[in-house]
Structures are given as C-alpha cells and as structure tokens.
Image 1 (cartoon, protein in one colour):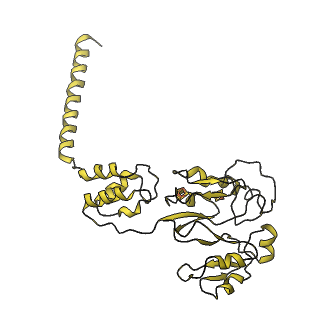
Image 2 (cartoon, rainbow, N blue to C red):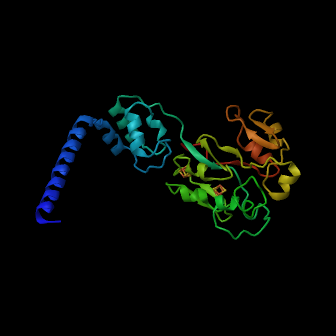
Amino acid sequence: MNYTSLIYAILSMGVLGLLLSMGLAIANKKLHVEEDPRIALAIDLLPGVNCGGCGYAGCANFAENLVEGKAQITLCPVCEIEAAEKIAELLGVEIKPGERQVAVVICQGGDSIVKKKAEYEGIQSCIAATFVSGGERACSYGCIGYGDCVDVCPFDAIKMNSERIPVVDRQKCTGCGNCVEACPRDVIELHPISHHIFVLCNNRDNPKTSRSVCKYACIGCKICERAVEGEGFSVVNNLAEVDYDKYTKELVLPTEKCPTKAIVIVGHKDEV
Ligand code: SF4
Ligand code: SF4
C-alpha cells in the first residue's frame, strides 16, 4: 500500500466512525426513556441484600415493580418498618402489614435419633446425596444433614446442631425462603411467627416402618387428636397435622401426650 492509499484509508475510517457516533448520539436522544427518580430513592431505602425473598430478581428489580405499582412493600421480608414507611410515603400508598413468616425445620431425625442405613462418602451436600440413595440416614422423608439450607441463608439465621439437624434463629430469620428452596427433602416450611406447635415429622409410612427408622417419628396413633377432642389435630395418612385455624387449646396438651415426642413447641408465645 502506498502513502496516499494509507492516508485515504485512515480518513475513510475516521469519517465512518464520526458518522456512526453521530447516529448513536441521535438514537440515544430519541429513544431515551427518563427513569422515574423514585426508583433510585426506593433502591436506597431497600436493604440491598438481593435475597430474592420478595420474589423479584433483586432489590433494584423490586424497586422498579414497587414504583410501577406492581408489587407491595410488605413482600420484602427484610425491610425495617421505618424504611417501609418511607417507601410507602414516597409512593403515596398505604402499608398493608402481614404477619412475619419464619422458617421451621419439620424433622428431628438427627444422627442419634434416626437409623443409619449406609456409609456415605460422597460430596457433603444434601442435593448431591439425593442422587446417591439419599445419603446415610434410613428415613427417606427426613433431613439428610449436610446443611445445604445453611449455605444459602443470607442472614446467618440457620445453623446445624450437633445432631446435624438445622436450627433456625427465629429472630434473625426474615422468611426469605432460600432454605425452603434449597432443601431437596422439603423438610423446611415457612410459617407465621404465631405458629408454635408443630408435628416435626414428614414420615407417612405405616407406624411400624416409620418407628423402625426414627425414634421421634409420628406413628399416627391419634392420641393427640383425642387429647384436643379433634379441635385442631387430625391424623391423615399416618401423620398428625395441625389445623392452625382451629387449634385453640393449651399448647402443652398434645406435646405431653405424644408417645414419640413428634409434637414440639417451637419459639414462644410472645415473640413477634
Ligand atoms: S432461615 Fe431460611 S427463610 Fe430464614 S432467612 Fe435464612 S434462608 Fe431465609
Ligand atoms: S433441612 Fe434439607 S437442606 Fe437442610 S440439611 Fe436437612 S435435608 Fe439438607
């Protein structure tokens, strides 16, 4: 290439670049959509932990939906009441409060309580163990014990105890539901904080089978049902269930009567 051709090529590229950037500048001006300034203000007020507990893809996405009137501030399980009030004021809406939800681990089948069916030497993860005959515990309904739920909690609200059963700190738990999603056995449920009595068992096998694998398994004997005269407790498919709308009797009654200690009081009456 001679000197003139080189100059010509450089000038052509320069003109082309100039034309393209002018085109982009014009398109940017024409297509620009003004962002509602309330979105940035709402983002500043939200906790910024991006836990996903509201059901949206992070706090920024939640803020956009709040401003567009498609979401309610009460969907955020983490937001402090003062911040929620400021956001409601910013958007000119009222807060419709709902009861706080917390995670509850519906299993007591720790290492000394449930039978061991095999040695498991694979990856120490509940989801991995489900692909290798469900880990080492003999109950196929209960906690596997490798703490996948602990790993996904953004609030340090769930820890494994010495029995390798997760324990939830009800004051730290925001009800984001990450642990519920992570559990391959569906052993964790979200419940209103006012729920205190639980049948901590998921085993629906016949009483002989369930009892043969776990000391604390519900055996469907109906003693709890009779103790409260059917008001709030019933046994369905070998497993006792609580009907929280009906259960009004003294909390201790079914817990004292249950022969396998499957019914447990979780938390205390005054917590909010
Ligand atoms: S314990 Fe579960 S629901 Fe509670 S904050 Fe942690 S991950 Fe969320
Ligand atoms: S509750 Fe579920 S996720 Fe947590 S340790 Fe047990 S099986 Fe694993």
